Image (cartoon, rainbow, N blue to C red; front, side, top):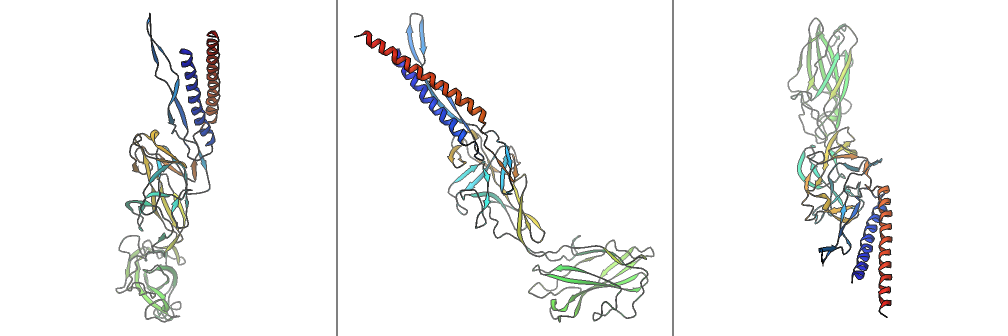
Length: 429
């Protein structure tokens, strides 16, 4: 009977609209969930019934069903945070999470980048899942390997002061030596360096273990337009030396033209440093006097740098738009530590939701394509930022009102069908 079919059509409407309201309710419930992607119910009419009439075949609908719950993966808005490990994807792509730091058995994907460092130094999410990244070696060079990002024991290796063979290494000193100075009465004497020189300056250098040592440079005039220089170190820091005395480890000469410009700068053969403490012996340190002058004004150091540094502990991190995590160390150095892995999918709308802001790949989504941010179609990374839910409350309220009214209308259909059946039954009495 058609009346019975109408009752079932109304019931199908109630069932479908109940699911739709459930989808809307879930969206509204997650309006404050970071990285949440909303959904919508998509309806389809049920297989229609064909009736043979004198005028030909006619089709009568049998109701409605929820054909699919479609994920809405458009970009959510951003919120700035004071946490540098909070990251958001600006554009397409997903952060990759592992269930184990060593041998993961499952891989998950998320847009919720509220990450933190756990007690073991791993970068994890709120559930303790490990953030996946491309790893760098101790020199800051990419290894090509992916793994859990660990920041616990990260240190910056020391660098000995260079030998000057490569430009920019060693000690680079630019100074002016006062042309009005006279030649000291006595030759230079390490037992009385100040009394037998005209000018001095000091610089900190580093041995192979990163230990600092102070080298004092003394300059004594030997003739017009000619000077000698001497690099002295406290004897307690030199193998075979005596604490409290000075040991000359390097020396050389400087000559100038009549305009005060530097003509030659030499280092005496055998100039090397044998620092104590287990460092490599025979350390050669380069001395570059480029730009040094000798004019009739007070002796002064214009610039003095050297390329060595000691070991450093990780003090802070920075994350750039490519997802590269750079460590800033206590010795003033900085180097890349890792780069966040970013996954993309041929059909991201078909990712499988597993709760907790996590997705897994499905047959319909296609396999994950692993890469990095700002590569190909992947978006960029924003640090100290989280992506908010992409749910639009005004749209959800409109859907809620529409579904509610449609639900009420379907109940009216069932009520009307019931009354019609009652009339038919009463006619047969």
